[in-house]
Length: 110
Image (cartoon, rainbow, N blue to C red; front, side):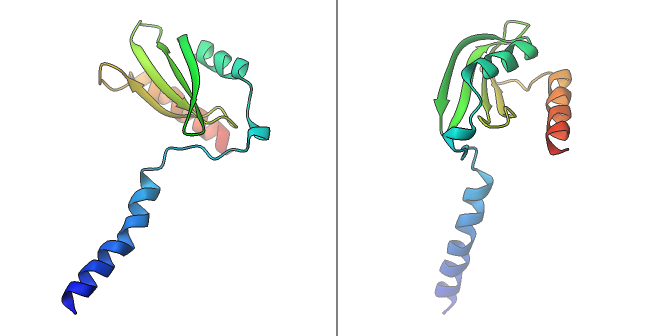
C-alpha cells in the first residue's frame, strides 16, 4: 500500500514539473509577426543579428548585444515578447537589460 501511494504521488507531480519547464510557443501561424518585426525588435535592443530561426514554435535570435557579447534570445512570435535571453558566456544579462524586459512585460499585460 505504501509503495502504491509513493508511486501515485510521484506520477501526480510529473505534469506540474513539465508545465514549469515549458518554454515552447503555441501561436497559430496566422498570428505570427513577420521576421522583419523580429529584426526590428533586435535593433531596438541594440543587437546585431547573425541568424533568426524558428525553434520549438518560437523565433530564436542568435547574435551579439551592444557590447559584443554573444546572445541567444527566444521570442514569442505573436507578441514579440522576449521569453528567454541567454548569454553564451553563461553570465546573467546586465541589470539595465533585465529592467527593460520587465517594462515590456508590464506593457504587454496592459
